[in-house]
Length: 87
Image 1 (cartoon, rainbow, N blue to C red):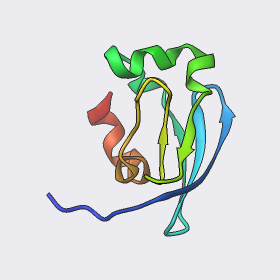
Image 2 (image 1 turned 180 degrees about the vertical axis):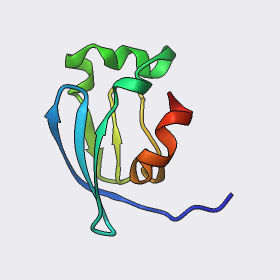
Image 3 (image 1 turned 135 degrees about the vertical axis):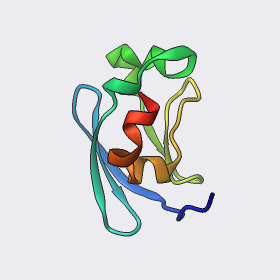
Image 4 (image 1 turned 45 degrees about the horizontal axis):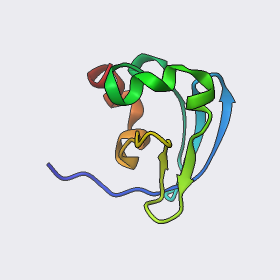
């Protein structure tokens, strides 16, 4: 399956478990990650102090957490269309 490539260029924590994200195509998303914070990889991020450790990986141009959790930038870019599948 082909999908466009996007880079995350900026982000801000705007509420608990919610990020504002800007992409290289000048689009933005506001994402509440609460519905997907389950399982071995994403479950630990339900602890707000863990979630808030998110950083922008300058090499991969993606958001990553210290425990190795991340989301493909395409997934973040198209969040409204994919969140139900992820949850």
